[in-house]
Image (cartoon, rainbow, N blue to C red; front, side, top):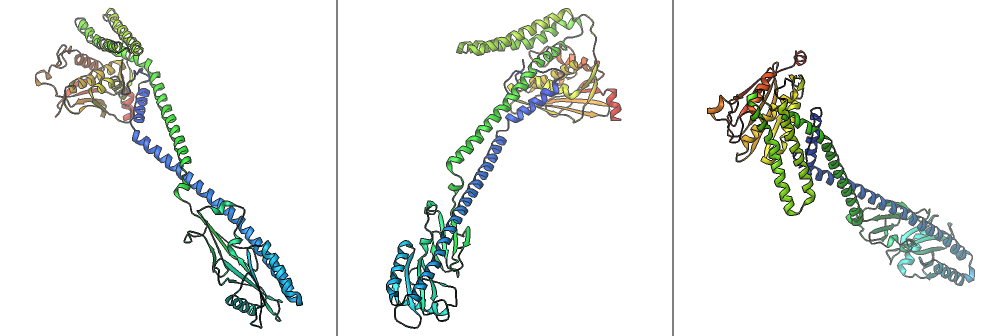
Length: 534
């Protein structure tokens, strides 16, 4: 049984070795990048909030434009009514005769009652200082304004600001409208009343309205007067083209309403959680698909551990049985610990693993009867890199337990040799496991490096570690059976590996290293690889 870095039992086969290694690496990278996932989540949230802010801004600008156009239409209709009033009053002034005062006052009173925005009406003689009529307005300054404007008029009415009220203006017309004009006729208009409407939109604190005379003289100015207008249009009147301007003050809370922000963030977070869960599920599925294949690979690697000489058979079997028996012992102890805690659900899984390891030990003993029989060696084309991936995958659990880092450095192109795949996998398995055993007692960082490279027509594999190294007294005898530097070692692993490498036409040597130990496997390239490289 092999425990991966995710705490799962993984299985692979020889044909699926590369696929599992790629799946394992991609899964590890996915689960080891919480910072990248956080940054991605923050970026998506920022983008979504930006879109929300843009939508809210456009929505408010669209509402402002709609309400402003509606206000513009209502105000334009109101000022156009003033022309009709001036025409009617001018006709009374010209043809009123003796009944002029009473008739003029009666009509003026009716107009002011029905149209409250008209706060005053004045009829001022142009050639006399006497006051003719002032209804709702009075004052020498007003009379002078009306008289001056009436004298200056040549046809169209003129607009002047009311002398006593900044929010009002006067529209002055001569009567009759000819060179023989006798009166100056004026309506005093409350400009703010022109902007009254049936919509409560303009009652909001953040809305702003301006209304000014054509020459720019302000009549109505709401709060926040320094804010630039977002809507500007003159009223649709030939005689009173007052300039209407509107704006709205948009705050951060308007652009990012807390309720909508919470909804957006919750939706994105839920999507991220579902996506992450989906990724983990896919990784588990790929790992589960490889479990059955790994069982077969472990069995083949165990078969490759047998010795060729009958005299080494018993020791060789003991060497192979160490792994399942150790696993059985560890799993049994774990089952006892779980049972003591009352966690019987997990005990079942542990016992299943014990059964699997027991069957594996039984299979090893079964091979005793076939060891002395001649067996055919099925040589094939092998990519050295795949065998390295297999060995590293099988030992990932041991490396994790030791806190050791196994680094692989391989060329991007295949290194193809002619040999028996399971034998080369067993050699690399033994070398990497020995390196992990060497760094087990080291204090500090524990590192194992496996490097594959092409040297001429030879594939070279170096397995090195930063452990204590090999004692000079046993250096020359490392590949001799039963010679070991470990207290519980059998001394068969390196001897068997040396024979298997020689059988493939290569060589296994130990190199001088400044730190730890370094073993080199040299194997001739297959003929097809030689032809390709040449």
